[in-house]
Figure (cartoon, rainbow, N blue to C red):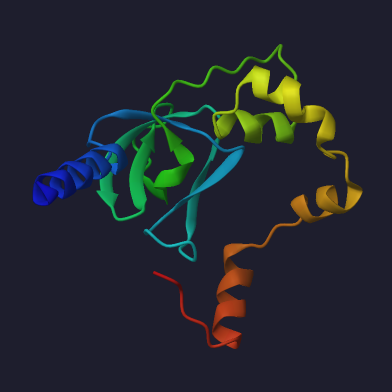
Length: 153
């Protein structure tokens, strides 16, 4: 009985985590760098935006190789956690901020936002300052080399 339960839980977990090659997924984060290899320190080959539609080409651990529907000849690796099965509808006429996009990408509903949003301090200049910083691939590689660091698996 325990063996059956264990196998059922294991198979359910694997089926939820796996993406099938050729399936369509949607970007669930505001901005996402597509990497040449399945590594955060790999060269960036493109950038995807919230709601962009991609096709799954390959899956390797926590990484998924995708091709944007807009430019199918381009392939790059992204974190599987930034992909959603649900279609994300965006519109030019709708104005959203980074907080709203982040919440939507995590699956929070409008009811959740209305109930709890009053307690959130989302207008913090220090957070805005940190979010505006960026590091190039070259700067990251230099930092890793200088600090004699190795990439986490």
